[in-house]
Every structure is written in structure tokens, then in C-alpha cells.
Image (cartoon, rainbow over all chains, first blue to last red; front, top):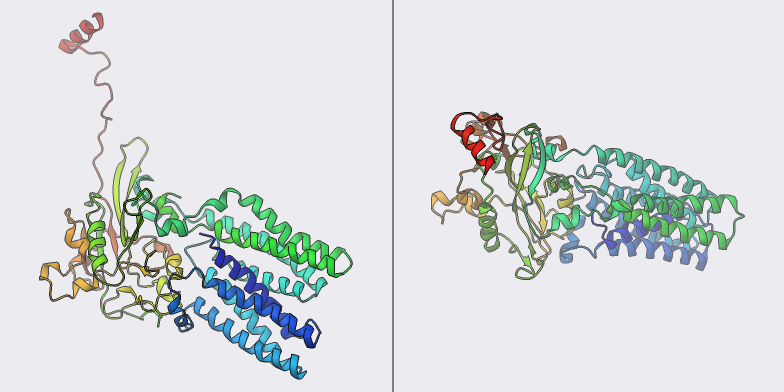
Length: 289
Length: 243
């Protein structure tokens, strides 16, 4: 699949922002006043900025308002609705906590649940696609949710919890690749796709088009597969293993937490790029790819 | 709403005969011509006369070779366009309600006044049947020529999709696949029509008719006719060797 920068920014940073909000709903970090306001601003910039980035690749932005209408069937629509509701609720929570010193404990818990639901709906946009077997596995939502709450814990300064969650993330990343490889290998052959397998070995004689087209550009993007193994090691190392080791094995401090955060974000971006770039769409079979 | 209708009154669709299709791309051209001038945004081309031309098409013909070891290969031309699936994933993933399936005839269409061009419907389609138009930024797909088949301003013989009307080989058939007594349904039953990638659960309405079994020569064309020629040919063989 084509790894559009807008979608990578969207899924990485809005996931991080909603992950931070999920912790803040529970009153973590336990701060008040301007420090709390700063945390809310960071969470909002990440969550809303990511959402805004996701609109950059739209072909026809003027109809964007309709995207909130199909929540009964569409995960993408549900994602939009969940994100807006979550951000609105946390706007109220932020006002009450920062300026009125209120606890907002109950609505905070609701907000946390909504933030996690938002991340879940994001993951389901990809998990629902039967055409991309690498994505349509139960571990995809777990991968997205772990990214969000581990990164969120790191941002919230819960370094030990973040360390444990990042270690769990490393395991899930690895399993997701193993499962993904197995599923992708089973996606069939040109003979299966054309229904001509009974005639013998099927190969492409002539493509339907000599120039490029949207389908090839968007769904038969193959650059990611060439360096997939190296990029996986970078994503796993920087995104999860190294920051987990730093957080769990070194004394807590701002410097180590910052290094762990920088590594995690860089690794998460590489991992998310690869998530798209190495994914095999079943339509590629018709092109013998 | 992008919920799928629980049932449609008709299941209009195409039956494509892979035995008859000669791969002339006439249907591709007729489709582009009709659909550029009618329903919705035109099908744009980019760099049409330049070094790297590309464009939006709703129907494309791929050619495949199938070969069993020891036999000559067989060429099969396979046109691909929207299959107007009964369980169309492109409809339910749409966040705006732009992508919909009509209850009266089962045609899957895009309402371009609601489409945001996110491309998720194209991602959900196993058949590569949807292309985002680079000029208009909206999703384009086969309309089954909805603006021809009910068009009373056209002579009756023209009230079929442009691809069907133009096919010089008679390889494309249009009709109601929900009616077991229709000509297309009988054709599918007679010839063992099949679905593309049935495992993905899309329940395509369009059907493909498999190529009929071919005769196979028992000798390849360039095999030696006789190892030791006799008679006139034997004499000629020896005479030519001596020259």
C-alpha cells in the first residue's frame, strides 16, 4: 500500500495524543494549574493535529462534513465521530480542572474510555479490510492500542509503566509481523484470482494498461518490501526495545525519559511507514505481483 | 446511508465470456467515451500526449497465459470492471454515504456530491474496480451505464451498457442475474459461470464464463516428422547432404 505521509502522521500522532488523554482522564500525571494546561495543549496538538493531517490526502475536502454521517456502518466515520466527541469532552474536563480546580473524576474515566475507543476505531479502519490480509488480523487493534497507551504513558511521565508497556509492545510488534507474513503468504496466486488455475499455470501475458494508474500507485506499492527486515529491526529497536530498556533499567529522570520518547516516536514512525509500505493488497495478484 | 439493502429487486450485471473475448479493448474505449461525456465527472487523463500518460478507466482488459506442462499455452483475455457485488465492501466502508447500492436494481454507484476522495472504498475492493480521478478528486467506477439502460431517448437496442453494445465478439452480456429465467442466468447455468475470488465473501453479481476446453495437438508443430526418411524424401535428404 502507498504510505501516504498524511496517514502516517495521522495514525502515529493522533494515537499518541489520544493515548496521553487516556492517562490524563484518570488524573495522570497528578499536576494542576499551568502544568496541567500544558499537558492538555500537548495532547490536543497531537490528537487534533494528527486528525487534521489525515484530511490532506483527501481528493475532495469540501465534502468532509459528510464523513460524520455513516457511523452505523463505516469505521472511518465512527473514528471521526469518536475523535470529535472525545476532544469535546476533554475540552470541558480541561476547563473545569485547570480553571476551576474540579476533580472531574467520573467524566475523566468516561473520557479515557472514549480516547481508547477512538484509537480502536482508527485501527479498525485497517483491520476491517479483507483485501489486505496482513492487516485483517486480531493483533492489529492491539498493536494500535498498545502504541497509544505506551506512548501516552511515556508522555505522561509514568516511566516505569511506560517501560512495561513498551516491552509488551515489542512482543506484539513481533507477533504481528509473524502473523502478517503467514497471512500474506496465503493470499493466493494469479490462478486463484483469475479463476483460471484449472487451465494450468497462469502468468500475465499483457497488462490492461501500459501506463501507471491509481490502483498500481495506491495498492501495488512495493518499495517497502525490499528493506522490510532492516526496517523492522529499526522499528522494533527504536520504537520499543531500546526505550523499554532505558526506562526500566536506568534511574528515572527527565533526560532518560526524553531520550526514550524521542527513540519511541522515531521508531513508531518507521514502524507505521512499514505498516503501509509492506502491506500486500490482493489486487496485486491480477498484476502477477 | 451506506448500509447495504437487505435484498434488491433485480440484480443487474454483466456476464463476460472468456472463451469469446478476443482482447480488442473495444469495451475499454466505448466505456471511456460514454462515461467521460455522461454520468458525473469526466474520466480525466494526465499527460495524455506526453512521455508518461495515465488516466482513469472503469474497465480494463488483462491478458493471461495458462499452460499445463507439455502442452501449448492458452491465452485468455479478461476484462475487469466493477462486479456490483451483493455484499459490496466498498459501500459499507464509505464514511460519507457517497458509495451506495441501489435497492431497485443492485447497481453500485458513487454520489460525487458527497464523496471526499479518501480512497478507502478502493482499498476495500479486491478487484481494483475503483479509480480515484486525479482531476476531480472523486472516486470513479462502473455505473453499468445507468444513464443508458433506462434512457428512453435512445433506441431500444442501445439501452445496454456501452461495453456490451460495442463488443464485436459478442463476449459481453447484460441482464438480470437475480431472475433464474433470464437469458444471462441461463447462460451462466449452461456454461458454469464463476465468481472472481469468491473466498472474500463479496458475492459478485457479474459472472465470468470459463474458456471452453481446447483440443491439443499430440505433437508439437516443430517436431521431426521422421528420423530416417525413406523414398523420395530420403533421396532428397541424402542429395542435399552431399551438396
